[in-house]
Image (tube, rainbow, N blue to C red; front, top):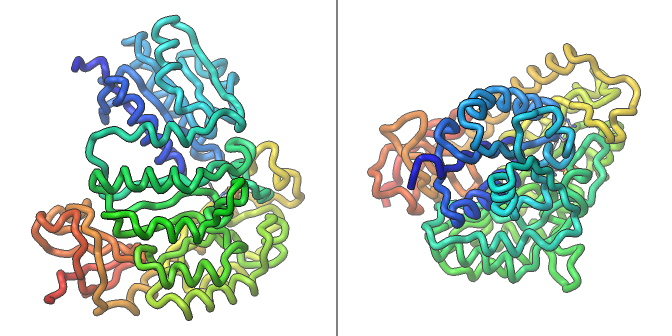
Length: 445
Ligand code: SAM
Ligand code: SF4
């Protein structure tokens, strides 16, 4: 294949975007294009974007600036922008970036091949946004599976969109209302993946626990987990994100009891003060969260609990921020993603009084990160010397002399071992704790 028939995709933001990029990559591969890591040699350059905060948006604009010389040298190159920022900005992007060829929204990305073709043939610049009522993307997801080998691990979107109204969040407005994929379709996709060598799936949604609420038939998240148990070749099931408000005994029992479901829950807390939680529209209190964590830990031995937490929400006082730190410490999370509140046009939180100055936000963020790191190290230190099942991902990125894989609770372990262990499930004993995970050794059976 000539060098000019390659595509380059760069993905910003969450795992849902990674999953969407994977679908677009498969569609382009089916159309005869080959992937490349070098935009300089691609004939299609695609940025799959995120607009959850201002920062990922700025990154995309500066990336577009870097791509400009490529377009000037080779005007036939198609530069395309997909994802949440495309949906949010639409036509304005074509105006702002004169060398951008294609803007493709979150409801239309499965038609990427057709739009690229129109750009190439007609020399037109196109913006397609569509609406959330467009025919299901899901069918294309399944069709996008090719005969090529699957990865060891795969994301499987089970819900698109979000029915919540967190006051800071732009996702519902760019991704639309919640749409669950039919259970049989998710199962068929998982079977197709495992038939090609995949051993672990991560079920994706903004709130996977709301799965099925919008479906005409009786299906919920636990019944989905149950139904995936008998997929041959599937070893592990993970899921993200779970809204804490929707955690119930049935879910906890399913994670505890279903052998393929891994013992890890990602439960975004966002803040550790009831006034903030209320202002954010999260629908639960700090007491509720604490009780839930207790129940989870009592019922699921070895479970790890991770979270998302935000600093600088409008009106957040020093005391309220400290309450978040205290609660974080009390819970002793295994790990966390941190976010600095970023006002998103059109969301209710932008209108709240007392926006927190940038300097205070940064100071709070740094204090929080310090606590998260200490907490992670402490949690890991208590688990040294334990044996656990590891799915061996490959050679360690940081230490090419060693292998790396994840325990069922999602923690990373790096250990010496032969490359023929890659792709397998083995027992590893942890020997030392780090902030990022463990070093370990293959257990003597
Ligand atoms: N649906 C998931 C949930 O509710 O837990 C999270 C999805 S969101 C894409 C990922 C994280 O981005 C959120 O948990 C939140 O902490 C953060 N986030 C969302 N909107 C934000 C904003 N305006 N500023 C800063 N962080 C934000
Ligand atoms: Fe945004 Fe809240 Fe939906 Fe998560 S649950 S995507 S934070 S609105």
